[in-house]
Length: 455
Ligand code: LAG
Ligand code: CA
View 1 (cartoon, rainbow, N blue to C red):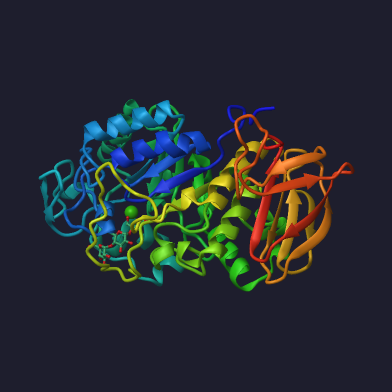
View 2 (cartoon, rainbow, N blue to C red):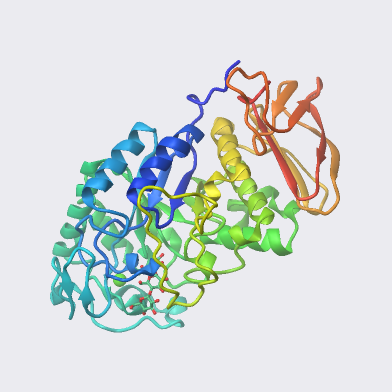
């Protein structure tokens, strides 16, 4: 019995935040492909303003593929190499705005007074600013004024839509399979529909809409044109893991007022809320160590949404908008862990969680839910897998029913099955002949077993 990796549907993507194109390509080949990640979200690949801060990438100057991530040739090489490794590329796409003020782009373009190589003043909305109180009640200002001073594209104009569509179609011709529409809430859903009509084929598009349920613009408006980020998921998971009880999570998802699972992009944290920027809340990040492992294990094991794993760069406590000037590019020899690159996607509980999700995708339901009414939980994915999380200071000792075949399994969070399926490099879990497991999960630990990691 060999681990059936080929049959496992890829179910999870990773945001390699600020990774350069040669580094992404190498990671696709060496880790993401073999581990079964579906895709990588890359930082915006188009020309942006000069400067070392990460957020310069969110100030577009042109749609030339020249950025801190690398040049066009390197981008094309990355797409091809990732594709060969079975990994798609999703591009973070700035559809709402261009750079603020005036200055230079990294490819040598200059801009100013709403004048860019591809746009001129008539392509923009008026210069008004979005105030904090507008988010709750002023749809017009949210969509037609300037987000943190960024020149707001007149997305209802045919020329702007054609220009954005040409950029997106160029990326598709290179082989890009998906797009994150940045700041989608700031673009009227109708404008996005018109733009989508100009895009070739039907790529995966997910709209970034920050909506905790109290917004003038509602996330549901964007469901007809693609997937949508479910920010409530990040906030509520954070609240529950920090201050609540994991027992509450038995109906996490639609039962909590979230959008339909099939529309939702979910994440424990993202590049903004992990540092107190957009949509920040009580989120859990790499800085929380084992708590972060456990929250990701839950996300990856639980059948709701399309999960995005965050892979961070440590900005040494950068939380304010200005941020330190940190050069984050790396040219082809990025080292995980040895530097400020956190590489959460490689942490064994997270990579193992992806393996669990891939191998249980055929059983999209929670079965045999068990909890101790507090912070010890266990549930199954039918005959495909079973898991347990213990977020308490005492060991989890309980006998739980599963729908799995009796036998010995590798806890994929802590080890891997050997190629010949004869040994597990980590912990071995036994499913008894009656289908039960005598759980013995250490404090702040977890286990996950699936049908294709059976000894
Ligand atoms: C997003 N989603 O809707 C991105 O996920 C988020 O990272 C972007 O903000 C934002 N929308 C615009 O694409 C980031 C930083 C901002 C930064 C902005 C533009 O979170 O702090 O603003 O990118 O670079 C910066 C300064 C501001 C300044 C602005 C214009 O921090 O103080 O007003 O630039 O000069
Ligand atoms: Ca807008």
